[in-house]
Structures are given as C-alpha cells and as structure tokens.
Image (cartoon, rainbow, N blue to C red; front, top):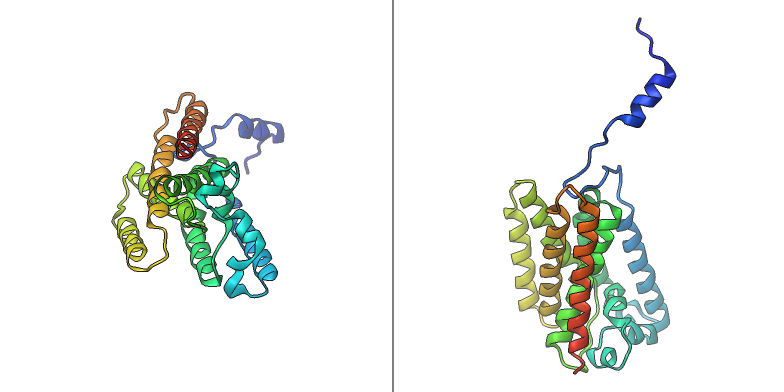
Length: 239
C-alpha cells in the first residue's frame, strides 16, 4: 500500500494550477447571484403589492411610482430610476416570467462568468435597456421590469456559446420569439429589450474574449468604459 506525506500532499494542492472558465473565473458549484437577484425582485414586488393593497395592481403603489423609469424625472435629477426600475414588475405574471427566465439563463452564465462578472453583466444589461428607453421614449412614459437585463442574458448566452464553438441556433430562436412577442403584445418595451440585448452581448464579448494576460484589468476597463458610454448617452438625452 502506498503512503504519501500529509505535508507533501498539502503543498501539492497549493502549487497545483486551478482550471478557469473562458472568462477567467474559477469553477463554482452553484449560483449565488442569480437566486439573490430573484429574491430581491420578489421582495420589491411584495412591498409594492402590500402598499397598493392588491398584487394585480401593484403599479399603483407610491413606491412603484418613485422607482419606475420615467425619462422626464431622470432629466430632473432622479437618476436612480434607470436602475431601480429594473427591479419592478407590473403584476405577478410579469414577475414570474422574468424570474423564470433569469433562473434558466442566469444559473449557467454565472458559473461560466463568475459571480462578480455575472453581476456586472446583469447591471450593464439593465442599464442598456434603460438607456434605450431614455433615447427613444417620451418624457412622461413609464417603464419597469427586469426584461432588459434578461434580454442581456440572452445576448450573453449567444456570445458564450460562440466563444465555446457550441451551437447557438436554439438561443437565436428564443431571442426571435421573444422579439416577436414584444412586437405583437401591446405595452411591452421592445426598445428596452433590444437595448439590453445589445449591451449584454457587447459586455459578454469583452469578458470572454479578453486576453489571458492582464485579463481582469482588460475586463474591468471594458465594462467600465461601456458603463461610461451608457451614462453619457443618458446624460445627453437631457438636452
């Protein structure tokens, strides 16, 4: 029977190279950011539903009005709306569909990208959707929902699959179907969805195609630059 010195084994573990994903993340066992985001969305919905006195009409609550995206109010200095609106939902059906999509798309992406990178992607996609609304919607129009961020995850999944040289046809089909639904059903923000989709794809490309050398620096700089461009576009809309 063989025998290994305990100290030698421990030293071997310390010096062994740990595999990483295409984004440079250490493989993790289970998602953490995705369930946290889902929980946060549910809590916000519950607060608006209780305040409104009816979950079907939660958008009538004062909290909903304070956090939803209204371009005119953002121009007046209520900048937080470009992000807080992404945690609001109009009725339970809207919430359920978005949270199911977030879970199905996000759990694998979080493992591939890593928790920090995934959160950056999600928030950038949310900001991308809000930026599109700020550019193309009227000052008094009201928009809410995590759909911009969810579409960003769809774009991200396409980029990751292409990076891994895996088939992405099914994802393209899902995106096409959701775009069609956004066109056919009234009241859905197609512009916000497309904004999130484009920004999510661009952000993910920066994450998974960054060179291995100084990868973290390049990724941080790219996401930071993308965020700055979106913030600039939002600022420009106020003129």
